[in-house]
Length: 116
Image (tube, rainbow, N blue to C red; front, side):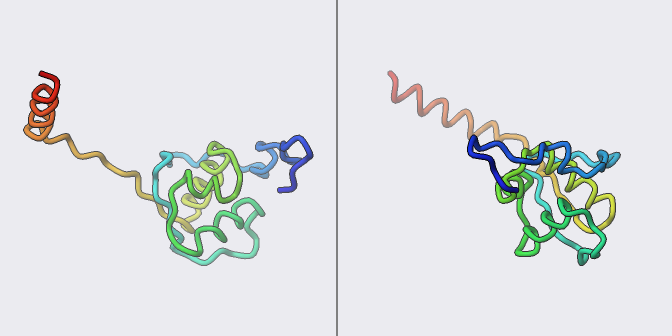
């Protein structure tokens, strides 16, 4: 996108979506890892084509992809969600493991020892 002298893009974010709507059932977190699983067909809208182009070099998170394209994360989520729904991109939301309580207790004991 070409920027104006004030730094605002010429095309507003809602126009970058080219009429796409959110993909049902696709919940992309900021740290969800996006990966291309199929070649981009030539009839893709420009925004989706740009996402596929960035992801062609390897998997990236939603936040990294948005930064690479200088797009708001909300716009990137919509574009990537449409690609996931079309079967061109896959994603993996990270799952957090529960904390090891014994390790947390040891850290807390160590901090108390340093303080006292």
